[in-house]
Structure formats: structure tokens, C-alpha cells
Length: 129
Image 1: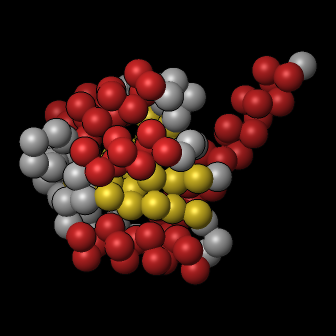
Image 2: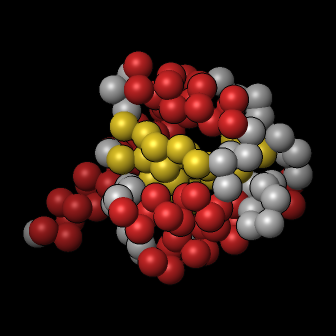
């Protein structure tokens, strides 16, 4: 499974990518939506982990842009602002795996990623039958 991490906090997003790499989870990262879109033009990602609140283009808008180009992609959101309204907006769609509040436990993120991978494999098998 190939993952795209996007957060405007460079220390956080690079640390998450490093922690995932230690667990043999392949993740690229970007610090804004423009960088993320450039990466998505050159590589195929199965899952994007997006910060909801970012300058210029936030995670919800980025999700729409990525989903329009890559309809099979799944999404996990996180936010440091924990607004219930944001969770309601992002959690009702089929391609959204979950919404996490910062600071979150990296083990929880890894569980969500693994769950998404398992679900994707099941969906692929169903399409092949």
C-alpha cells in the first residue's frame, strides 16, 4: 500500500513518514496541497492522510481534488482543532477511513492504515469475481 501524508507542520509529517517507514509502510509526504498534487501526478497512492486545516487549500478541498483524479483512493483526516463539525463533514463519505485528533497515537494511525489495506484487498477480490 502506497500512502501520501500531507500536513503543513513539516516536523510532524516527516516524523510520521519516518515512523511508518520503520513499520515497512511506504509513505511520501508533502507540506501543502500543491506539493501533494504534484506527487500524485507522478505516483499512484492508495491512501492519503490529510490535515484538515492547512493554508490556501485545506484537507477537505484536497480530498475532493484527489478523489476527482483518483476515485479509488481512500482518506484519513486529522486535525489539531478537533471541531465536531469538521468530523461530521469528513466522516460520512465511503472513501473516508477515519478522522483523528492531534496529537494522535501513531499505533492508532497504523491500525487505520492496515484496516484500509485489508478493506481494499477485499474490494479488489469482490471486483475480480
